[in-house]
Image (cartoon, rainbow, N blue to C red; front, side, top):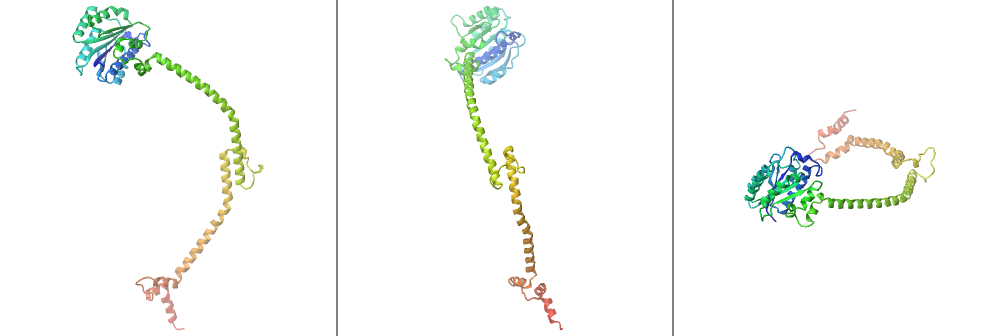
Length: 361
């Protein structure tokens, strides 16, 4: 697994508004740039990527290993102005020169979909500088590929030299899928996982896999609808039986209510309610009212007897309190109290009684 720091340069010029690649060229670039970033970060946990917009040569995010951060800033890129390729490449080179991990290889991935304004000599000069600094560069040319072909080919040939093969030019014609073309290119093939592992991990961006999943879901939905129709027929046949069972339960409930109100079930009279026309809640409420009406006379007797018992108890208590003998027996049990003292006799009324006895007739 190669240790590598990568700056991804996206073309966000006004040419990105063209709709010959997907919805427009910018959205196609966003998907493709996210694919390149994921591939680089997954090929080695220590790898990092950065993002540069070429219309203003602005480094949107410095080198980072956070894939979510890269995707979030990539989604905010808007089309504006025009692109100058040589200036954007020099800014990306300076960013790689100040990378944190000096043992990482340096790579620039450029997406270009607008006409290149520089002449071929200026581009070759930039390529020689990159070769001297040992910076590899991959170019994804689409949209304006025919107009840029000669300049880009000379640029890559100068960068690779006679024996070099570290830099690549991927040309994609209009009408093709940018994301799929990159999957089959050396830009992804050299660093991406082998075989179908990458496709499984990125199933949401694989049209063939998405189509297979869609067909499978449609077949499953059709089977469920077929099974659902059979279940509806079965439930339709069972509905009368369930209705009959409910009628039987209702009849039993009516009989039980009639018996609870005293007597066997009889035909409804004009004075009695029609239980068949009442709901279960109404029947239960009616039974409760009847039971409360039956128990009302029985409850009146204890309620009437309670005041008499209370009056009787109060009268007995009053007689005990005014009985001198009862009070004297209680005082004799108290410690340090002389029941024969004048104070006690006065309290019990005995003193007055003795005085009355001493008076002559």
